[in-house]
Length: 508
Image (cartoon, rainbow, N blue to C red; front, side):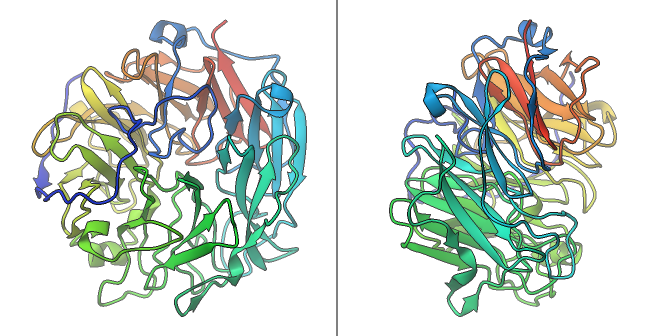
């Protein structure tokens, strides 16, 4: 497929050696694989969404069929992505799912039967703040699992009618029983002089677990009602009485992208949204920040970035926070360790992870789509012989090779070696229905790359280098798949979560 190189503005950043990168990462930032478990959203703390599947070649992918014997059904709507624990209850694998009715469930990996279920509390029927479109509004985010501690961490809103509090729970993966010292009532926290107000806050962003610290982010509801802020809560999982929080300086500025926050092993990178009050001076809107410890921002240009166009973005509701970041390592690039952050108005920013750069201090600003509402998604990343790719879905306005396809697409952008690396759009694949997020599989971390995504209820797989269709779902549809969710890959299977069920495909 013909490549399409777009104009990019570059600012070469000085690399300041702060923090550390996880040593057991592959070239695109993924931790070294440890078994078949999928313990968090997009498989790794980097949020790369890459799954090494030795048996899932492109030829095999073309033969995928729906697993008729797998009947994983449950009550409730699912806005999160599923997880998988290989050594589950009794040593058998289970899929973990959550619902907006505040249920957490483990499902047998072979049959789909419910192994255990636990309800964390009453699920509010509305936010109580005067806006919001999800009813009920319990657990929305993808949990995270600590396999060694045999614990799953989930966050949800609690209340008989409207939201009265937000809680973070720790449950045994073996039977769903609560861990001692939990739940944590986030509603009792303060960040400096700012107290957390439950009704206007929404917990949509996937949870992160980095070096024993659980990170939970908050934003607002659809409609931007009430005095919410962006929050990142940090909890010491060994001693949950040790916790803290950072909150944005201005009203709004929510952290809400479903894909969650990315990590290079030193805290998390969070992306904030727009100010809801039109602040004349920059506080924390349209910003990428590194949060470390128990919710701490060391406020310097090393640890934060925002575009010079932040005020225009605020005014157009073109918030940075509509997309989650992904951390990648690009061999031969300067800098080589990058945070990829995509704004709603179609800019893909490459940031030096060691020095985010302050205002306008990006490494590259690359336009991938046009329109102030063009991208809401969770990107993924993968490596091939061509280099490191970032793949993501768009709502509209994508600048695709040869002018097409138009409308909603899944796009792949190559980030090659260079000083600085200059991105280029490799391919676009048509997308319909809910704008879901892609993942990628390779057989060994580099070869046989396939990008997988849900397309109007059907599973699609395309060649990671060219975008050519490999698998188009056949007659089997998976209903009720929510926007911005993504599949997972387990033992040669592709698993998708929808309202009331999981769907599974594998080679015959």
